[in-house]
Image (tube, rainbow, N blue to C red):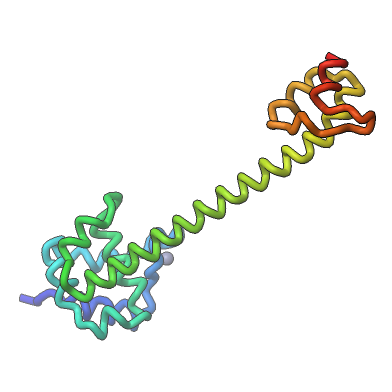
Length: 172
Ligand SMILES: [Zn+2]
């Protein structure tokens, strides 16, 4: 009976044959590598991962393969379970580091998105503050009520020397 290859051998083979190792590859779905992983049960994969040599895990050329294996093992769950199953092994350290990097990446994206939203809001507010004077002059009630919803500075003094709130009171 032909015995299974080790996981380390599969990783070496994938690299040698330049198999696609892209997570969620839209072209091939990394089919070849993922199909080859099917020779292992989940428990076998855990055992294989835990006994991977440090040399194999820390080789950055194996990073994609390792991440793909771990993605295959957790599907849509989070990685916390797998992390505790691999605790104490080099593969476990690899996973924990990958989780930290991913969390930082998500946090940075979130901070950037929030900053962009904030800047957009400030810009809209500045424009509204500028445009409301014209809207009052035109007595455009729709525009005025829309612009007022942008949290304007009602104390701003206009060209007539009156505050925005005073002008609003006079004109509405
Ligand atoms: Zn592919």
